[in-house]
Image (cartoon, rainbow, N blue to C red; front, side, top):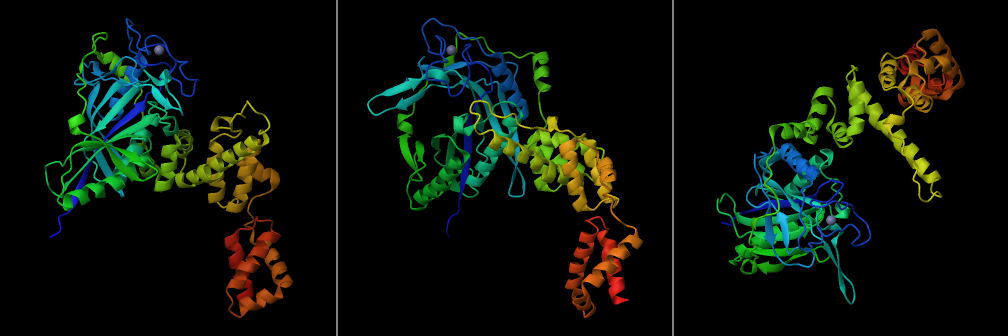
Length: 493
Ligand SMILES: [Zn+2]
């Protein structure tokens, strides 16, 4: 019998917090400044300096805890993790060892058509390190990043595949971005991941040797590394080999993981409590203020939009990702009997027109170098949101055809005039007056004897051509249902 193996995966996700200043000093937390310009004696690790905790970083950590369904204990503390490396000027990193600010939560996310849950062990606060640069003949260190507040979110080993890890990471990123915790810009290294992965016979309770893949800076990289590493480990054990607890790195170009060091060479960090910082003891009122910043989680929002407005998953996904557009939709949909139609206008017409307008503005402004054109947003719309409901009403009642409705929308977008006013001013109301339609039909039949004869001879398709001609003659205003009925009656009668 062939033994089946399963993967056991846990992730440590590092996220830079969205604060104005660094964790222990007043230096700017900014990406892209010239090397070593956002530095001071504190973040350069000079002797004798004292750290002062960044209050907003503490708030964002507690807020992350609440968003990830964690406990925020009454007391947490900071510890020193001691090691030497050129990008750590103090020779230790301040982190949280045994008493983190948040612990024991979970993240729910969509996976393979259902909802999966990954438990969160802890999310603790620490500081980022500097960055080494290697040139042809020398190396340099940029300390701008040293001391930037960093959150490490540790998951339980609840993930079982590369795809599942990928979906979890995306869900986590959604929560952190929408919650205002981090911009999560992968290109700027704001999110990095360490992956712990082992394999074991399916159904076994014991964990295999834990292998860590360090410093992944993209989610697709995590997925690719796991797609390589899981079969590699299964291959070793099925051939009777033994895996050792070790650390590996992912080579994205070669598409392989490589061993960096085994357990025998693991660091002993000699953690001890940070003597320069008080333990952190949040009060109930402080936590109460944080609670008021908790947002509706993206997954809950998507489910609510599907349930309350009977939207298809794709529309709900759009409004989950674009919170401002979703809120705009919701303001209108609450007053509407047909939210699905409102969603169509908002997504297919309004959003499309906004991006068209902005793209056009961007093209016309290419010569202007420094100043980018201000983007047109929902706040700049000339028409009132209620007009979308009015437009839906006009179409549903048959006063205007859906084709005319598109023209009315465009007019309303450009001028801000109400749909009813536009229809009246331009005489766009659908013609449902049978006398008028009969007249158009007679004219079209007389002018097109060939197709008329074809239809009489049983060629059903010829009717569509004649219908099209009547619609054209009426400038799109004839009620298409009535046109079909009258033409059929006249030709068959
Ligand atoms: Zn500093």
